[in-house]
Length: 431
Image (cartoon, one colour):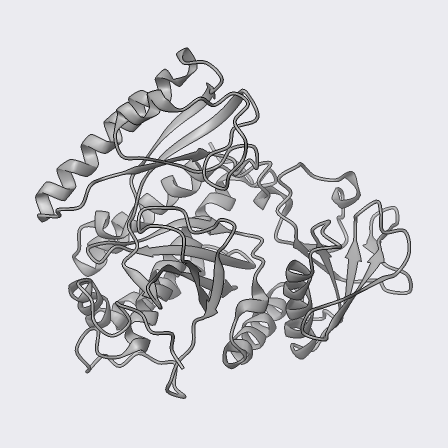
């Protein structure tokens, strides 16, 4: 069954939905042409917020976990996409090594690894899981809540290759976002395919760079279908490095929050929106030392005491210096059983393969749902078909809404491909 959503079958975003459905042939052709020029990330997930008057991505992950939250009905899509992706990169591939995060006690995360192993096994590959955790010195089997298990094997590094005992992979799949930097064991692997590339890690990535690329994509897409790009794009300001432990260091944050709130108010007035604007202040590099702060008025910043504050899932700053992005807050109009929800779309290569709803009963429509207490409800279909129905009025069928989510997810994925091209250390530079 499709989870009951306030906006699943009806909703004020119908006008944008109608425009997207009417433009489907042009949209799909546009994506095809883009993928002829740009390489999509190997896999990705995108958090989307549906405010009713606006539908926009708020975060894009290039090392997505949570594959275990996809419904079994979506698994064939993931397998087909995996086949296409591998065939394009390494058609002679036989062995795949998955490198997970160092979370040997986190069975929920390891359930995600087990699902990835299943997907690539069904795509026709021999799959092993190689851990770079220094604590994994021998084969370690971890039992999972669903009765499955994963076998973590210590990696073996040769002169130019990485593998595990009696297993030499042609392709290595990272499911580790590298926010702490690149372990030396992963460097200089010139004879193996490393997916995604190292510069997709958070030690290099910046959210501001991604959303700058997304803004470019949104403008071109808005022109294609004849809509204001703001309807699908969260505005943002980059603050750069700020000393959050002192009031003087907050000046840049305060200035950018004030400027962005003013721009949002102007848009709300243009569209007759009666909601209170807000912005989200967060680390530009996805640092775990800084939480997500919701600001509705610039005066609210004076009340925050950053230095030494404890992490509570909402605001936490433990380092003094941080690169900061100030992003337009997007409400969520989605509900599951009265709890606030947001869709998360999963993609592999250039294909949408599924997703789920992140649900949090303790959070409001303007708050971050990716926090302790959240749960996941698979994004599923009542009907056997996953295709949208262009002839049906907007909001009348769930697959239409899900198609729209997939379009926004693919726009964010395209922005990520622009981003990776711009930050590729091996890219040729022409004068």
